[in-house]
Length: 334
Image 1: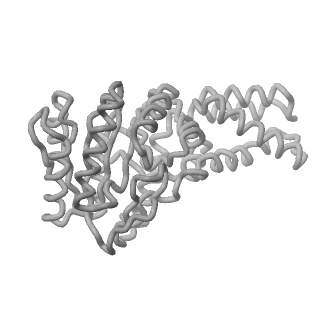
Image 2: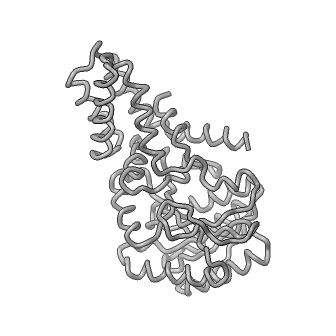
Image 3: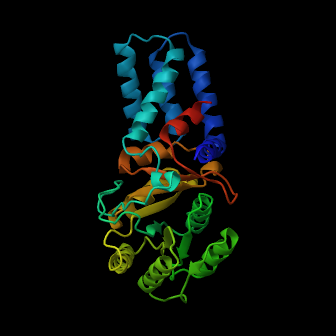
């Protein structure tokens, strides 16, 4: 377990390189420019946070809280603001983010059902002790990095000695099935697939039966990403859930939205729409390494009240890490 904690810390730091370089430089220039806090300092801090893509709402909330604390604690030096800023940013994230997503995967304990009734909540599933498989439903628009993220998540779980099975539930998009099968070969995980245009519910049913028969720990189900047709998407996901619940009333246990971090605030708009259509439990933020605007995680946490479960930190097969709020903020400032 220690090795995975260390690995996740390293991956998070690597993935934040672009965001950190931009954010830290601007913040340090701001802090060291003046010897005392002035109105211009607060304006500059707002600009710095907005440029990191925290968004207007989060930025104003954080700066207002900082100003209140500075007044209360009689802080006059900008240099003392950095530590308080870190505390306020962690607070934004920890309002929704669990310390370690799916802790049972690390500890070796029985996987517990999360249910799909409460957004961002693990709920109180009625699964029996040691019940398997743990079902993760993956949603996201085409081009978000969903298929790649599924492959990385499968690799991440396999590295923790978990038996993983993939289901090619995106039967709508051309080549989606083949792409998932390629990832399955790369990470040495079996993929249950039907022909393009077939019923995703049937794919989910067969995949669950195969997972049970082969004693799989985790079943990850891909889904179609056609958000422009919210009604069809919702009906499709509801059908998948009904099929799964015939076997396990608490499935799916996680419904993760894959967002492209490079999209910044536009990605937040996508998340809003998906949240209206799907009972999400968390976010997998892909391509974090490809943007200087990693501050989008704060906007997601503050507005959507959804935990960031995982972050994509690079192009490699192993470039995925579980999200930790404290580590994320620490790495922004190092």
